[in-house]
Image (cartoon, rainbow, N blue to C red):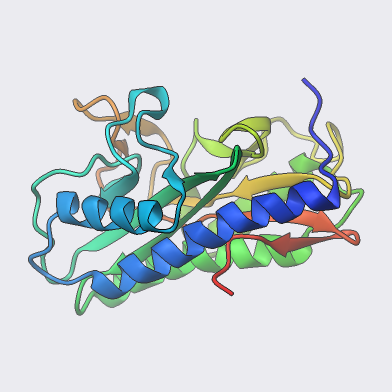
Amino acid sequence: MAIAIRKPQEIEKLSISNNMVAQTLNYLSKQIRPGLTLKEINAMGEDFILSKGCRPAFKGLYGFPAGVCTSVNEVIIHGIPTNYALKEGDIIGMDIGVEKDGWYGDAAITVGVGHISQENQQLIDCSKNTLYHAIENIHEGMRFKELSYILQEYIRACGYVPLRSFCGHGIGRKPHEEPEIPNYLEGDNPRQGPKIKNGMVFCIEPMICQQSGTAKILDDKWSVVSEDGFYGSHYEHTVAIIDKKAVILSIDN
């Protein structure tokens, strides 16, 4: 399947959906505190999105039961909101999708609950800094495998490893489109495969593990952890290639 090239007016529509994702994440991040349950976080997120005339895109997607992925501590991605109440020192990843007028937005952040350990702050910093480092180094004409290699090498330089079997992705009229963008190089040669072109829109989402990048899905059939059992972190932005460089669409402006 070909990777879509978006017209400027289509990128503008994607910007609207992604701006709403960013607004929702900013709103939720300010609510995070000990005692708040994951179901309460999800309800606040869904209500906020609906109040803006948009739809929580993850609710019902592939059977997922909620609008906000709430991934706590060792859960790296796809955590289901439960009655678990956040505790001081926890870390929580929130991944949100929004649909507006048939166009999708997607982004994620990981934040600490109250005072967190330096070790956990470094883990969060790795996912965030990896994301922005990759975005700064994207340019038209490079290959997606080169982007994966950049992500991999930055994560490793931080002393961590990327989660395997899950990846970034294209986005547009569907929440997940071509191409797949792993956070690690598949094969030995980064200078092969599809090239990044003006008009492409895609999500980059570093998923960070501490020792093993091998993924394990928990009994709820959704929550993804590393087989090492240690805490992980996750950050994500949707970007568009405009004037030969990556522009972040999932920002609250």
